[in-house]
Amino acid sequence: MSDLSQKTIDFINKPKQLLINGKWEFAVSGKTFPVVNPATGDVIAHAAEGDKADIDKAVTAARSALENPQWAAMTPSDRGKLIWRIGDLIEKYADELAELEALDNGKPFLVARAADVALSADMFHYMSGWATKLHGMTIPISKSGGSYLSYTRQEPVGVVGQIIPWNFPLLMAAWKLAPALTTGCAIVLKVAEETPLSALRLGEIMQEAGLPDGVVNIVTGFGETAGAALAAHPQVDKIAFTGSTEVGKLIVQAAAGNLKKVSLELGGKSPNIILKDADLDVAIAGAANAIFFNHGQCCNAGSRLYVAHEIFDKVTEGVAGIAKNIKLGSGLEAETEMGPLVSNTQLNRVCGYLESGFAQGAKAVCGGVKRDVDGYFVEPTVLINTTQEMKVVQEEIFGPVVAAMPFKEVDETLIRQANDSVYGLAAGVWTRDINKAHTLANHLKAGSVWINCYHVFDAALPFGGYKQSGWGREMGAAVLENYLETKAVTVKIG
Image (cartoon, rainbow, N blue to C red):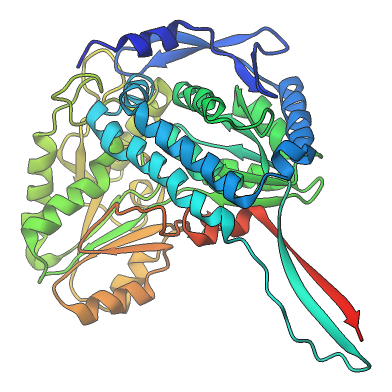
């Protein structure tokens, strides 16, 4: 598995250009930036460094495509078929895409193949069906003085700017692009500078599927330049962002210039609650998966673990036992179970939080240190002796670090502690008691609550957060609201 396929090698060796109006081109400035393999720290490619000038070109191309009959007059059925073809081609090139994710992001190839790539294809397949089902309704109104026919139309919001993160590069592109295409929008996609490769390959795949020129434009570059220019652009009608809450707030400020619509999928600090009656074999494995999946680089990671005090030692020791046996290594090695963090910046961030936790009195049952090898590896960590006010409990670490705390009763105190966060993205509950399960689910302030499971995603399920975890929803029928305008039409008749 350590050897890349020839197709992947050929793609890596090609110039990494921007996709604008159906053509691959270098940045206006001519600048590039290095793309790094996080397992080694080695530079594997150079990508075009797009900035404001390139965003201007991409937005112009999207605006033109939005008004081009080749896209604007395409029937809903044909649009759905095109989107379905994109999903089929993702499946066709699944191994290549998984290799790119393993190389660029660091995640294990088998995980990328089974999760990221499969879910990306499914997102396009699922959304393709909605293309023929975006309809309005007739509405009886009570206006006196005549008869009226009133109805609504669902229309594309227009030119959409989309900014995606580095933790699931291909999947986040699919989450953003598929529904926007379904509704008939035109798009400028700004991808994370840490992980541009799979999105660029997806651009080629969409061209192969027959997507008209300019409908999707892809710009690589930095958030401070390309991302900021896209968020503030006066010809962009809507901005969709996935990333940190801190940057999400900047997106909102930038969007105020023309009051463009905004949807945000932001950070989390999700509580994972294990009751004393839970099936511990299942709950312990589930708690480990909740925090260690994707190296803990998940906005919905179960990073706050609340455990009934009677079983606290057994659960923390069990999760630590799993953590100690996780095989760290390059995502391209067949035996790897956890890859590196995505960058040296992220490595320093996670290590900084560990230092803060230890300074405030936390103790590591396992892990807690950087692995002394090439690449950006942190050992999976279980922290105890943690309290609600600690930074490791309140702030998003975005790494394989869980803070465990005991509780005595399933009561208002537990619910208050679980909800004691500026975030509200996800939560987990492990119990055999169906009444307690639903009671907790009803009271937890989170957009997703998993009971006796965790990290369960489906294209049909809406995903998003309460509080500072964002605005709007991804996936499911709910995501279509992000990309549609509702027009009311009234005709006087008779």
